[in-house]
Length: 165
Ligand code: FES
Image (cartoon, rainbow, N blue to C red; front, side):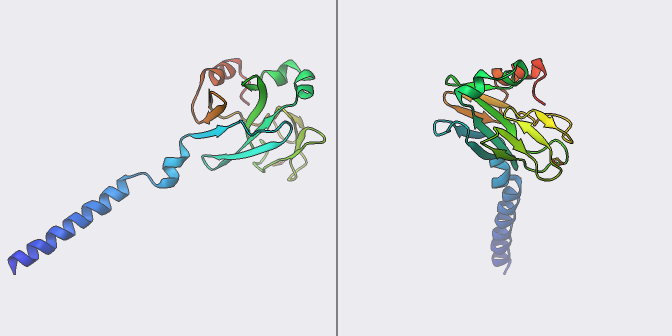
């Protein structure tokens, strides 16, 4: 009887250890939340890509040559240049109350349906109530891809220049 109890207790202990180990492991959603690599090879000019990073929508907009040519210094300071192409990369949440603005390719801007706010193609607020530009997330450029969540050299330069938001 003692042996049987010992064997059962042993199985129970292994079971509890397994359960504890499972609870120590990060959840799949947590594992996936750290970094997100986005390949930009398929990006099309003036067509918004929406990715997900840490539960937030990330806007990626490849600019056309015409868009780049007419940019102001403030706009071009926010461009992420990958493989010679200019991109807007920002968290796709309105800086007013957090709605997700819609991209209007014909106007090359973003409209927030919640209270009418607008942002230009660089994510800069152009019509109130949004108080500030959409935020540029940490990123690192790796070949023709960006790794969201990693602070690369280009991100650090933007941070130092104060153009992230
Ligand atoms: Fe976008 Fe209010 S949440 S304008």
